[in-house]
Amino acid sequence: MDVRGYIGENAAGFFGALSEWLAIPSISADPGHHDDVRRSAEWLAGHLRQSGFPVAETWETGAGGAGLPAVFAHWPAADPSAPVVLVYGHHDVQPVEPLDEWESPPFEPVQRDGQLLGRGASDDKGQVLFHALAARASAASGRRDPGGQAAPPVTLKLLIEGEEESGSTNFAALLESRRDRLGCDVIVISDTTMWAADVPSMCTGMRGLVEAQIDLRGPERDLHSGSFGGAVPNPLHALADLLAGLHDRDGRVTLPGFYDKVIPVSATEREMFARLPFDEQAWLDDAGHSRAATGEAGFSTLERIWARPTAEVNGMWGGHTGPGGKTIIPGQAHAKLSFRLVANQEPADVAAALRDYVAQRTPPGIEAVVTVPGSGVRPSFSPVDSAAVLAARRAMERAFGSEVLFTREGGSGPEADLAAILGAPLVFLAVGLDSDRIHAPNEKVEMSLLLKGAEAAAYLWDEFAATAGDLTAAR
Image (cartoon, rainbow, N blue to C red):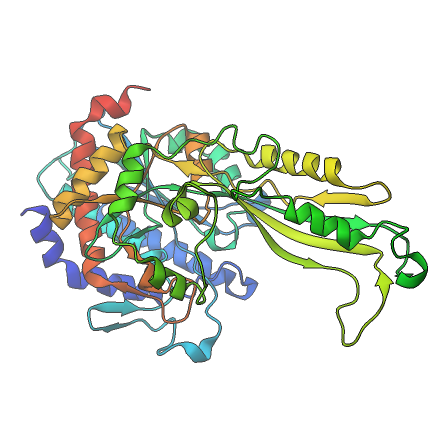
């Protein structure tokens, strides 16, 4: 039986299993649901064993197992020289509040009008599980390992973490400690979206993230503005100058060296972005009825939100903000910032540049402290002309029967850690939609797209096997 026929014949069983998994409230951010996250991991390991994976284990994370478990599975190819493919996803889900906005209970999945509704349906349980169906469909094509058992054309490894929705706190350490078992030639990510159901596309990159807080201190206490105004430095004035100076007249970020390592948007990607059916006015309406599109000069809106780095002021405060007037020179002023990074930018470099910028522009008499929590998130990027991306594009076009375009995403995740620690290129193969309402009430997934995802994944294993030399050259 061919791949498409196998998937169609087993679709009902696939959705039955997915619904069973979605009923487990694996909310990693809520300590009250940590036992459910563990139950979710155990369910997935069991399902993968039933699907044919000879190895499917739960892996503890954190010091002494204080974190939440990931799932690892391994299905060797019949040919030991075949490419090794690692699939990444996550089995934890977002909190569900506000509950009163759900049309049906979030952990009682229902099928309605070709959609499966429930928390995690799209992000990311549905997109994880289609790989198990794809592996079965691929192995059913007749390949056998030396022991006579069905086997896929590539060696498949799955790493499905349980803390992605709460920051992947222990993920990098898990990759380091298990690197010997996670070695691979290419990494497949199924935790992104397509442009639209009728416009299939592949993501080729995700932006990184640095967050920071600036605290300015002037006088030890608030001062009377009549007695001291114009004669001592005002922290709010200094803060306003710092924030206003973050961008020049062309919308470019002014931190020293900010663009030094930025990879320019290629002509191919710009052409692909331009071909997407993007309605800017509709996008503005969806963006809280924003009144204008703006940003770095010389780039389209899609290029700005996908492929260019940014600096944003997330909040600022200081002085008197209550009712009525209070004529003071405030003692303190504060602001929270975030920077979205693109390929080759390093969070540590941006944090250092921010500190230099603040130090250079802070006036005498003001003490400035820049706090950067954590190490940030590194950006990830896959060149559109790489062998792995081209193979994935062919697989998706075979499944969808139409041209596949390229996109990027503005969000951030642990993908860069995967690529850096395991030393393998990334490929994004996913079928979620922006309209799936991920992280919001009434999350759903298009059932037909999950089946297309399984089909594309099965074809991808064939494509990788056919281009083995390109993928395994770095071994």
